[in-house]
Image (cartoon, rainbow, N blue to C red; front, side, top):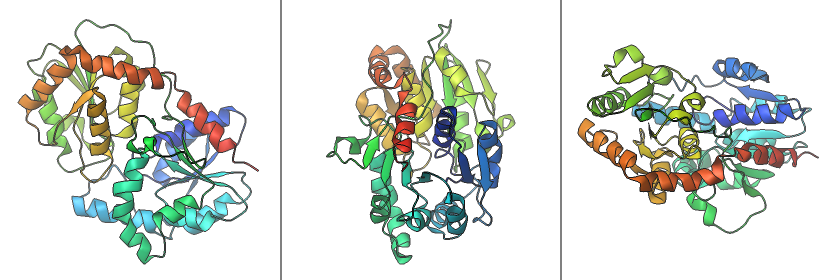
Length: 357
């Protein structure tokens, strides 16, 4: 059970494929616009009957985005569909942000797994505090709702997650990222750099992409930019050493890369680190997990963090450092030793299937 919030969705597809490959039937309940990707993965799909209108790819102002997400996290409009969809299934995996859905399913016959798609430290910190006031007004405690589920499953790297150093809890499990195994590196002539900010639209995102393009104009590298649906590629002005695409599978590009410029989205970040790539991270939203993910990467020594309004000159300087100073790549290689095999997906699937009664 999921919804269209951008970075929360890739683990649903990855885990669904893994569980289906083991011979189980997998059904995804989500927004209608998610149907195509779900069915392309060979999974069954059910759309919410009457959800609050929302699409991560649409343009939203800062306040509009915050209010829209708060409504989605606390709405009762999804509960009836969720209870109906859960009937007859052996285990239900619910996005940890869908609080009323988890609350409605807790204590029923079907085991419930709450799925945490990024750092637990963020979701149990900034997210919980931001949503707490609204959720309490609706009679929901974020932590009590999570703790009432049978398992809290974090598809992230425990060593990078600031909460990973906490005491052991048998109902709180870090599986590792639910991402494919890294592909072998393919050596290139000029260094190739991937720049990708987000599939979700954030204010100022187009200008940041243009600043990245301007930053590399005089650098001896090749740049590939993916905009996703949030920014029209034709609205950008690339230099001769850069190509701009709305979509290219990162899995195909990363093995050829020497570095990545990203926004601190969990999925792109862990994919880059699994390939041993140093990073320049430019968070797009101060209230989301991106600043925490960026800080964790910088603390590990595998990258640098810049503000969203960083000038082209500042971006160029940072990118030059992570490409030329081999300590960044060495730190990324240490993380890659944990993540490159892609076994987080299998461990997460095991944890879900172990909940069936």
